[in-house]
Image (tube, rainbow, N blue to C red):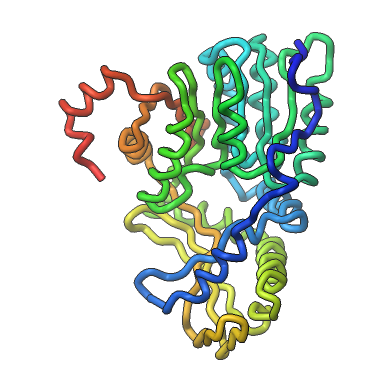
Length: 356
């Protein structure tokens, strides 16, 4: 099956070539705000995911200890056919922040096995990453009997939402690896709401979320983010270089900053990377002095249990209709649709609407 509208293996520019990045603006905001130890500033994650950082990240996520990738692959191998049979034939999948496609290929293979015709569109801000990763999966689905057409969308999430509005027929939005819900509660709900606004009746959202909690899985969590300190250091140092280029001065020098990490238990489990200057740093461009001991969060990972995800979706106007759990793991995939009138009745009866 070949799509008449999308060329198999192509990368479509949906705004990537004229991308108006606000990374620099958000970086300046994080540095300019008066320091508040109770609401620590966060550096933009996008600083890390440039054409240099992405290959490092792809190496990290396939290390043995980074269980989330392997658990998600195991989940697709076990339940991928069930997922494929829950969607309508001819569905268009939009993979939000696709990155490395070796993982999603296990889901696409399940669509082939279930003989469910589909179009897979990988959405990403890196053209180089898309060209490499789309070529990889397109080659695997190039046979005459293939049921899956593969292509890339080069642009931001906002570009992806505009493009998705032009897609006819059923749509399945993929949020693999905790993309949409990997934030503090309120922010995660807002991200879900932003995609809910473009969903039509019949559309589905497949959301991956890790539920390994610090109370009983701390060692496993720590190993996932610390088994390859060398790779993480390269990853963050590239982010430092990216930040310095945007600032036009060397605010982030390796020797001036301490690399720190912790695992929190409340209000939910969060693995936290943060950075502290070990000397006074003067940012001349913004006339700001960063003092010893100030902390900047970067690249945190939130974990939410199944009940939390259910409530989070409900608050966003969505309803979880199925849940799959990876074998011997606390990683889950949630199949989600728009709430209907029956869901609203259940909310009023159960008191879910009063939860925050």
